[in-house]
Each structure stands twice: as structure tokens, then as C-alpha cells.
Image (cartoon, rainbow, N blue to C red):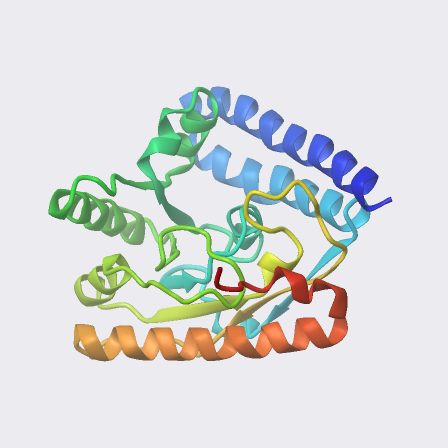
Length: 252
């Protein structure tokens, strides 16, 4: 049954994303604002409905009082592809920092470019950071919040964190609060896994880290706050779904 539900969701869910990419590759030629509304008010909510009623994965949002729809930086834990599909359901005008390689994918990459994603070439060193910062300033001027995943890639629940400096660069140069987003997505939609396990995904928005800290202070506070809350969510998830303890990272 689990395999069948996962199969059906993968077919339906990725079909919705594909339809969204095709539609917005055309719509974006005429109106980039229309692509934002198309994704965030139709295709991605439709994707969330499929996730709920086919895969049996529901979503709970905590700390909604910390969401600013017109500004700010959001630093999210990245355990699954699902963050990139769901977070803009709740931060409606947000843009995401994403790997530049994804923009090279035909149709998918075009749709992301029209939406206004911030691409980053991780092999370009300091030049990549400058380009990311320049694009981020443009998005902030347009009153579009920025979502960044500080670790840069997906990691399993409980895996040792590796935070990269990009988020600190945005924090220091944009002089905006950074709101951490803890989550438990890796238990239900694991990295490189076909299976989708029923249960409750939690996104918890934490109190913003206000501007003014130096780089080291900021990174320590962000990592401490985010990892502590993720650990709590992991414990809560395992208590409610003991069979998913196997999804926790184990060395070796």
C-alpha cells in the first residue's frame, strides 16, 4: 500500500510541477509577476493537496507570527525537496537561493528564472557570493523575502550540520533579520528516496535574529537555534511515528 501511494503521488505530484514549469515558461515571457501568482496560488497549493490526500502527508506551520510577507531572510533546514515546493505557500512572494545548475534544465530552469530564483554557482568562489548578494538586493527592493538553505544541500535528520557562509553574507550586507525555519521533512520524504511516508510535516518559524551581530556570533546563534529546534522536532516525530526512527542519520 505504501509503495502504491508513493507511486501515485510521484506521478501526480511531479506532473503538477511539470505542468507548472511548462505553463510558466510561456507566461513568464509576458509577465514575471504572473508566474509568482501562478505558482503560489495554484500549482504549489495543488501539489500540497496531492501530498495530503494521496501520500497522506499533512503540513503544520508553527510560529506564523514570525513570517513577514514583504521582507526578511529565512534560513531553513534542508532535508528534502519538499521545502522548495511548500515554503512559498506560506511566504507568498519569497524567492529561493538555488544551485545554478538547476537553471540549465530545459523548461524547469526557464520557469525558475522567470519566477525570480537567485542562482548560485558554488564552484565560482567569491564571484558567486557577489552575484548572489547583487541579486538578493534586487529581490529585497521588490519586497520579496529570501529563503536560503544554509547547508547548501539536503541532509538527513540528525546528520551533523555543515553551515556555509552564504547566509551570513546576506545577513551582514542586507541588514535584515534572519528567521530560522526548523523542520522534520526528512522523515517523510527522504533524500533520494522513492517512498513517501504518511504523517505530519512540521515547519516551525523561530524568532528572528536581528541585525547587528558579527559573522561568528550570527552563525553560532543560527546553528544553535536551528539545530536545537530540529532535534526537538526529531524527538517529537519519533515519539509519534516510532517506525520512522530508521530515517535518522547513523554514521557508517
